[in-house]
Image (tube, rainbow, N blue to C red):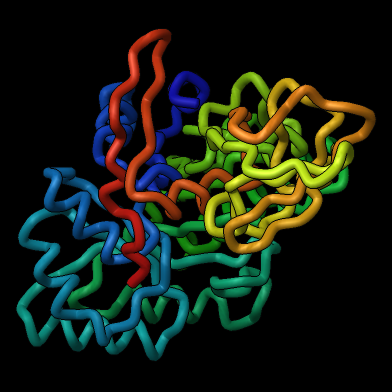
Length: 341
């Protein structure tokens, strides 16, 4: 990913919500990343404590958190998104009261319809112009997330979505500059369209997260092969009630109830490596019920490795993972686990 970003002249700023680990984030910085993203202030506080000097939150933080933001500004260069004029005004007032300034980017809705201003709205330019004039806020640029790419039905559709995002952001940036608003940064980020988005000329920054591990969803979306998936769950067979059913100790508290999205079929709640005839068809809190097609040599006490459907959520469910490199096994503390506020 770093090589692709560098080749495209784009600054890579990985999203750490996938791994929540200062150790892995340092590896990403060492490879050339310009900084990191965090999902919530709690995550940012962990990474600021670990000495990371440039943290971006592509998340709409409410001004009720002003004290935490101001404290972070003493420890790191912090930036976050705004997409609501009233909220931005409250942030401006909070920064002026504190005698501080903070970098912000305006979130743009490029089709996922979650957060962000509508770039086609007649009010879009006036909103941007108004936010750019607010004291205490330094407008750095525009930011998008093409989350709709996770629902692409084909590789062609995914590529079309990536190009549409680039076109939307490029057009809006140009319109802003024509009305006198400087747009220094145009930031996008999602793993599925990265292979196409990084070929576009619209972006100055890219913020993928899942690529650090990949998962079964990324395989189903053509972003990775199964052998690229770095995160797996080591599960134990705890019961074999019948020839066609196994029970593993990895329920929804381990694998999550997330299904795999993508245009390649990926049924069940994870792929059991090396056993194509096993389907994790149901999860309870502590149990994974596995349907066996034909026969299996597995018995209670045996262990299997599972590639999860969604690695970002799985890594947030445990305090510690393990780095396995050949015969070397080392602990990987998930330092920002559970920092959801």
